[in-house]
Picture 1 (cartoon, rainbow, N blue to C red):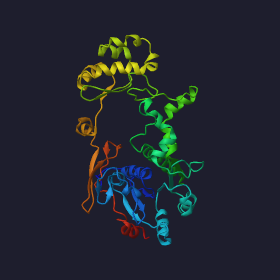
Picture 2 (cartoon, rainbow, N blue to C red):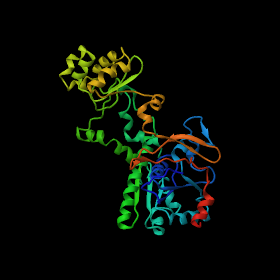
Picture 3 (cartoon, rainbow, N blue to C red):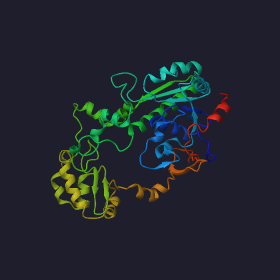
Picture 4 (cartoon, rainbow, N blue to C red):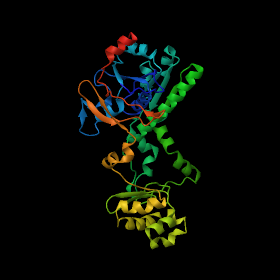
Length: 386
């Protein structure tokens, strides 16, 4: 299934009862680090993300997103309303090292699989819970969906231009961040278990992860009189950073400019129009729209490569804005070797990403695709005597 590489979590068993993105993302990362992941799914339909289509592409009856986030896992079909199946699951949990669940608050308790109940049968288990908004408060019963969590987090007022209103991320960033935070908590709890011999209950939510994601700018807001962030209304890229920070259209594509001293940029671009601002750093923020419009007009007159040939040798922080086609063809991407093809016995073959983590200089590579619903049920039950 994987190349001969000594992964740090080899030998650990993760039972993943979660679905959609946040929990499965967490178990994916643990799997990439060597853990064995058994995905618990309903017999009738399985994980709901099997039908969460990002496009009209379907592979082996499932969505591309399901394949991307569940590669190389095993599937155990369990009907949680069936007493015998529930007993089977509890038997598996006595052997597990980690459990991940993202049921709405209260549901797991009604199933008799809350932390205290599971701890009673396996005190060494690291139990991870992911919710939308935590375990108490007025939002607990609200759907813990990424766009809705983004909406409540304040995050949308940091994206886009000032005149656009709230702008959401084009990714399920709350899900991904919650999954990453869960992995951090699980790994810390496993270290602690190695010392104390006891498991822990790790909890996070989409909202907590999105708040943490904003720690830098939110701390600024909390300590500068509570002023709300004000985005630039032209080529905005950060609500709190001054000109020239932004993305600009050139003659043939787009160029990103990061933190750059305005006088140096003015000289390199031969922009006399910036003279009123070059020695007044305060205006780089207060007049940033006017400054950026001057820069934009100049950059639009030549190609991106032309400007890079001038700016990069002068150590100006800049980059061409790449689309996916350009990214995949770039030497910078190719050298990372971040893609892999995973396969399944029924003919499913999908090109997807690899783990972003290297261990002792090597990146794990898997060849097994995401499982069919209950594909490994018979083998798992036999192995664990369930």
